[in-house]
Image 1: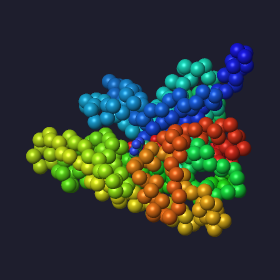
Image 2 (image 1 turned 90 degrees about the horizontal axis):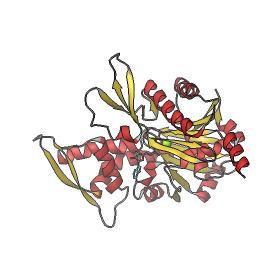
Image 3 (image 1 turned 135 degrees about the vertical axis):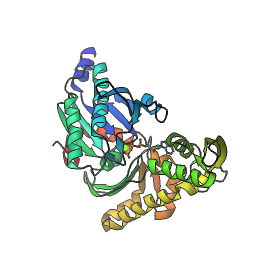
Image 4 (image 1 turned 180 degrees about the vertical axis):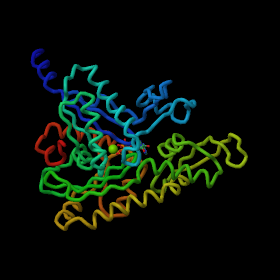
Length: 346
Ligand SMILES: Nc1ncnc2c1ncn2[C@@H]1O[C@H](COP(=O)(O)OP(=O)(O)OP(=O)(O)O)[C@@H](O)[C@H]1O
Ligand SMILES: [Mg+2]
């Protein structure tokens, strides 16, 4: 038993990484998810003018908006693209080394799920940072496919399945059949846009200036896509735009529903356009199978009902939607045939 366990441990040195704009997850084959942290890096400029990493992940996210001059908290991925190459590379290396250091992996094969629609240059940058961090080979997988696999959809069947992954930076919609993506669409409207819509709304309607994190908390705590039978409310602290003083106001779920209605409408429209482009045979399957939601954005209260009312089809939320893409990426490691169809080793 011991021998086999060791042997298995030795052989299973593959890693799957969900490089998300909001959260990065790392899964070790045979062990499951070992890292689940915000995609944030805090850097300090040293005397030589170089960037030095102070913290990565949750610790760095806690520094956002609270850092003194020489320290910057960076979100290197924005809107589904790599906004800061160097920092993205540092972050990937940091996470891989953190896993590697704790479990004796040597030259793992790594599969990375990247936002759909990265440019060749960006794909190359992601691949090279993984190689620099010690990967033996690197595969990339497209997010809608990883989401569909992670949601447990039978992607290899000759049967249409529709997945909508609402992350931090992008909403990716994909129709899968026979191991491939038949149609996919990515829009740069997801969790972050909801947060900024809330910031704008609170500023406009309450004259109150709030930061990213406060807006995100409002979204999570009282945000809703549909009218709630019992509205929720909370007190928000911020700076009064006119008086400049620190103050607090009461905000309720109806306010947030109004604040986020425009970006939610854009997501619904993107879904409609994918349905319109879906070939009739696959559309028939989707009517039967319904639509599956993954990603943190799918946790907005009532979003399933809102989308279902809009497109008149059943909508379901995947189990553990925040983990679906990482799980699907990990699953692809076990199915090399699927991997070769859905990604490439460039
Ligand atoms: N309970 C919740 N209600 C609403 N939104 C939530 C909830 N939990 C997390 N989110 C939002 O989900 C988003 C993060 O989701 P996720 O981790 O799937 O994104 P990501 O994979 O990093 O981004 P992307 O796929 O766009 O690169 C954030 O915008 C976060 O605020
Ligand atoms: Mg994602």
